[in-house]
Image (cartoon, rainbow over the protein chains, first blue to last red):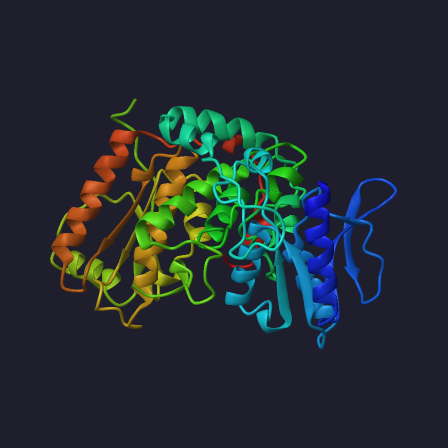
Length: 257
Length: 154
């Protein structure tokens, strides 16, 4: 981390800790780093920004565990959008959350194929330019047969670990359709017809904020975000709906015409 | 071969409009192909994407969803959801390489028996043109894999 960024991050976290019960951020460990709930007067020397973690998911659990607490969170753009989607669906109370926004670098945006690598308010770092997802643009140019061949190959790799769902910051249903034998048969691998992936993709409409955690989590490297991004682009075109932008915008599939 | 191909089609018909429309078509003796297996639902808004996906997974060559015209829904806005959900599902099918024309949404009122016959006629002809869906590895599904689901009465 550059000294300037480290200074901004430390100052922002320290300032937030003076007012809040805790701040969720990454902390360097002997190997790598992990999410940590910083408390007042704690050493901030080991604050970290890498690698990416689904901070919204961790914060959601912390808020449930400490129902009285007001917490801060060091959040990238995608973490902020995830929190917005969760708040819209009454999973997170934003009154109890303070976001310390971190802008990603252009290099990070390239790595994530992210078009908007910054939150609405930036406290740490400088706004960098995003990139269009070339894989999505390429997929739009494929023929039906090519798409069939591509996804047959991808879905055949699925080991049904449910990693894509478990890591997803906007998946929270206690009873999941993907575990219901009516929709996804048990004991077959890879799923012979991609019910699991199609059902999940439909559930992502108006919800997926494009953080690509599912792709990182997938042990079989299935590029699921391609599918979700295509659907997100369609929802934007059809109904002008962009997930994660405003708590007031209602998900299109949940409301009437 | 294509001449003997009989498409297997699942139709989800809303109880208040389209199912009554189908009844009307029968009473008026309108001829239409018998390829559609009708499932009566209380509202086209009841048809979740899971149900359509399951129909394809079980080997349907096409799925047709018929509901009340917008504004005529017995539940006021059930079909509004259908009107958004099904086009989205059509897009998704297209993205994974399943011809989106295999899923059709239309509105048929209880007075539109002739329209029902025409829509089904068109759809069966379209699926006949597309040929069998031939989903990958469907034959590899062991007998009874969805047994539990059947016991649920799904």
